Length: 84
Image (tube, rainbow, N blue to C red; front, side, top):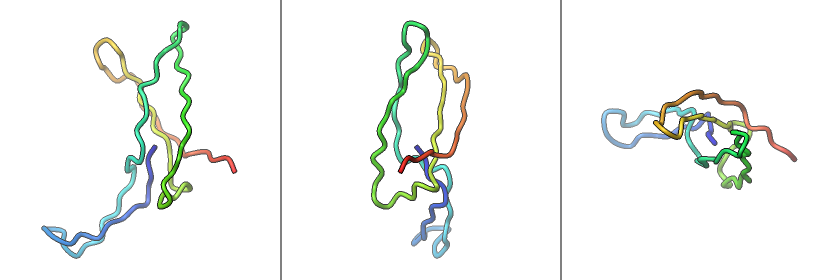
């Protein structure tokens, strides 16, 4: 789970006094999800957002990785679909 549109004010260092903007900030990391006997993942997760998270700026990123050698096979992201 990631959030876009965040910012922080820098107090010290080379960026002191600047406002920095951040996208794709990881808010929650879940997994890995095991594969069933057909080689399919059945991921299920209940999101419990913190009060300061802006759900309209959130999304989900998915990484598919080989179990035997760690090679990444696929990566994608999509906006979070929320139910009301």
